Length: 272
Figure 1 (cartoon, helix red, strand yellow):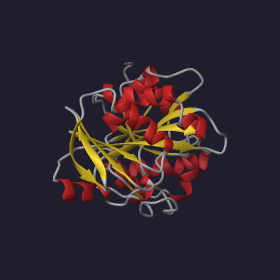
Figure 2: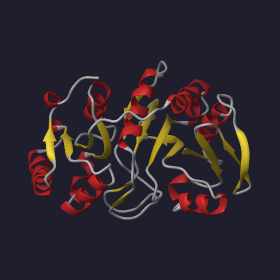
Figure 3: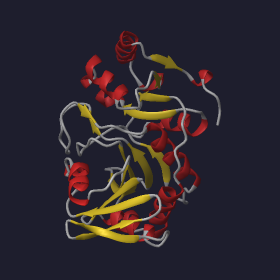
Figure 4: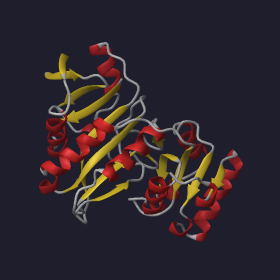
């Protein structure tokens, strides 16, 4: 069983939750934070009051108060961007540097590369007109001890309320099945990880944590080691070479080499 987490303070989350409740036979199995907890054949769905990015250790609280077991957490959420892009995105969580939006400083959260990357592929299949589909780099909280990823509607109130966008996310969650390929780190490029997204959509690879160029100043051997460990003990990495400066590329290649992590290119991967 996996767990879907939604929240009352998030219009996109409410939109996605409403659509999910129409897509399966959900049964009420408890209460958490005064909201009903639902269960289907594959999922629990738990609703919380406040911002999800600050819901530190909510997985532990859910297990203790409800006595339920789950392997992964899928967080249905809004995405906000200054550019106000219409987008549907997927990303792991954690902080490469300071913990400015929840979580812990220089700490990334367990993720399931196989489930998360397949979510991106199914979301692409369910893409609706006017919306881009992409990964986002690892960012923000909360700190959890369960493999977790966010799936989001961006980037303004109009999109968060868009029923077609909510339906696309909900359908993606309901169609989601883990597809296992070699787990990998994705490195380089901007926040939306364009090259990493393209590789995931075309090749047999499962991306876990993703390091954008803007986070390279925080990257050292210790956090890369932990990111690999929390990406299903991955032993390979894909670098968007044009998405890094020369010194940044040399820095990360030296770190990966010291950890015994192999750098792969698309030539090393089989197409889907």
